[in-house]
Image 1 (spheres, rainbow, N blue to C red):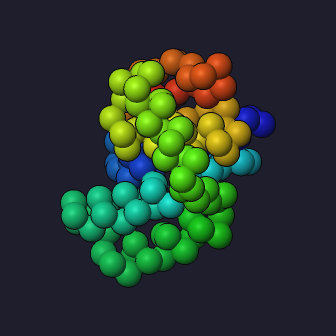
Image 2: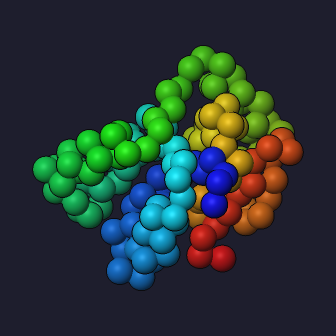
Length: 133
């Protein structure tokens, strides 16, 4: 797979799941260009600790790994403005719109997420893929 792929927070969380982890690991191991954002990283930290999925030490270790292994997109004012346009056009939540806008600004072709409509194409640029569909 040569596409630039953006991973939503739920995909990182599911990588620790017994049921869905294998699917996620397959995506991670076969995709040469993986992108996350500072938003995804922060949501991962929050969800992992709040749901007791990982300890603080484990979260630190995984975050170091993500930062060194994946491309990390930052959120800029233009990203926020674009997210508001996406929200208005597609009626997504603001935070989902921020994920979408960051993926598009990062020139990703695919967004792996469980939260949005499978196979939907956004702005003729980004395809939403639910790996569990």
